[in-house]
Image (cartoon, rainbow, N blue to C red; front, top):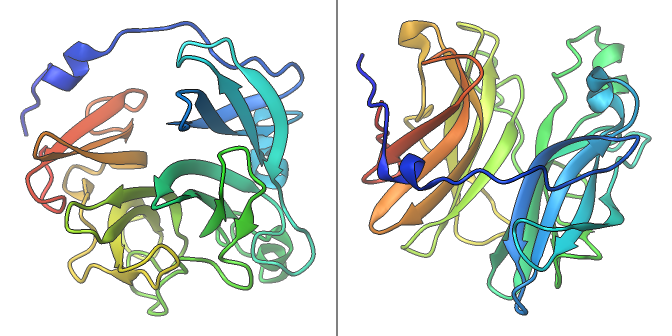
Length: 265
């Protein structure tokens, strides 16, 4: 397998300074969007204490600025765990925001650690994808996936995505459909993280899995990926994600596609 070292997209990137400063908080998973007035809103994950505590206490917060570089004003929490028996009782994480029609759509992941502990399962085993909507990036947000996740795991225990669904990345396809890319951890086969695709006619779903999933799979070189963001620009599909060993385990990986399904190396 060969890799090009540059692309027009990569060459266009310009570094900026840190944009979010939340004293006493860990900050992760930043997802920005412009509003109608040209302001930039950022939805991001945050949690207190140690890095590993994201799994128990992460929440999604909101910040706003007049330009992408900031300075940003953090306005507070917009979505947090609901406790009890809800599927998203604990961690609310991985925000990604887009405007779909006249509404803002906030995809996220949640989990229920008590459910995992009850079955002596891995702490990640209850992670699922959810959706909330609002009329403004500032909220208030209404959960669409209230009683159940937006995208649950496959019911077939041998499937690559029967363990968890995470890292939602929405693409508003040129044909009008909603393509939801997601990560699953293939614990039942090769124990690697891969990207799949589910497609819906409307925002609320249902999201139907692409029958040839996964669409991004580096198991042939024993490597994996996560945290994708997908967009369509100048007649081409683009995907940016965290590399976990394809080139190097701590860099960004950039892929291109003509159809959104067959991706470049």
